[in-house]
Length: 289
Ligand SMILES: [Zn+2]
View 1 (cartoon, helix red, strand yellow):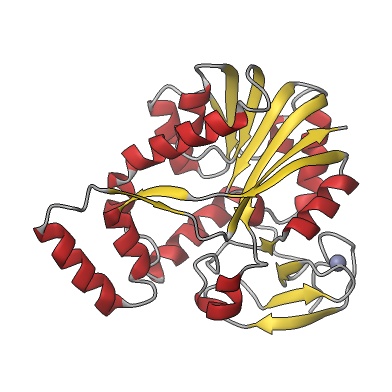
View 2: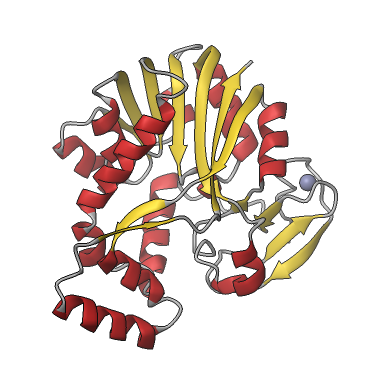
């Protein structure tokens, strides 16, 4: 079997970190540059949307996703979108913005107050949801949209970058559609964390469809090679309902989750907002050179 080379340095030498059914292949670390990735065969050219449907199905099979819990999380997703927008506006306050992997359009809805905002999304179900909410969005990937050079002032990817099969190629395309001096925001797991060392395959970011696991060092190098200068790397938290928190805990301990769930439901606390910052997610701001 022939495998894809390292997505950062092109190296073909690696060591195996772990094997788990939660990932789409073995997790390996490049001997040359230290990039951590899921080892993928060179072939496997099914279409992006077919692939998305398959992965969504697998996440349900592994009981990682409860559709009812996800649906009821909508108010907290909106709150999270507002937080991301406020954070972004420390660097850039207006202009043409593109979100890559815009899901159901929560961020684009918020961003539309300040930016001329559009998105691309490969999951057709999410595209339909976004359009039903009046969000301008294209289905497919960024390259497929074939935007002219320098079309945008800002590009954002929230929990999308780790899903891409060819991150170097994607960043090169982003650099092409951004104007020089334009801003890029990427939010992605940071595998250089206590939680991965402690939990290994049970770390919350070890899930199907996560293909690349960056650190501040590896993402900084990749961005540099693709024409960007990193301006800030910060570890960020997330707002969620107590209900979602319990759902996530159930991945680790069904018993503990059941106890918390019963108590919180009886006390009417499920709608309470929790703010969690475990330090294992980074938000990177970079500027196109
Ligand atoms: Zn490498």
